[in-house]
Image 1 (cartoon, rainbow, N blue to C red):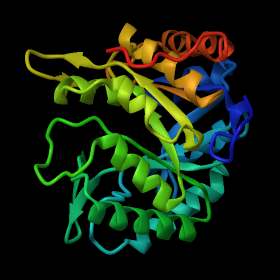
Image 2: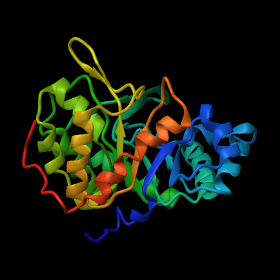
Image 3: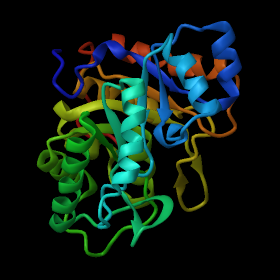
Length: 287
């Protein structure tokens, strides 16, 4: 299956997040890892240990940046001081693309530091796409937007989440970071078929895939990233790979972090799905 301009980095393979508990192991043991993901905001500083560690990592590994504060769905004016600091990190890492979330999280310059769901309306599509294009033009790097897990919905929505995501990325002409765990979590919280979501996004725009663990509570699922992905998420990942082709994949594990070896071994389970592309037919619509 040929690559497209959004998943053209098919040689990236499987990565894991660069996390503080693993610094010493990585720098001393130099394990074989396809790439590391960093949270951009952790390195938007003038100096100190974060940048010193990052520079050591960059000497040996490819790094891809993932952000948590661009808030493409907000209506505030863009913060160009923030974007200039972000651009400095981009130049340092030479990341092939930058990802952040399809959400909002700021009002009148006050930041919630949360990834809040959006109303799925054409007005929101136009505002979000305009901001994505403006950020991309300033940063001069391709952008992929990630679907978030959600726990509330807006009555004003006029389309499904996957219709909204599709409309935004087409209008912005950007890529998708497809988080299959977030789709599964939201599908249970809002009672929709997750395979309807997977089957109806523009697969040619998927530049990266995230997998992670979640936690089940009495009335909802929560995207916790504190253990390995569960079987339904791996099943959805296999389906997504069949639809999108070979796509760089990241395992997220951000709380109750075990040893480096355990996280890496879990991430490498994705390779069996990548190696099996085109062997099985995608699932039409199975819950």
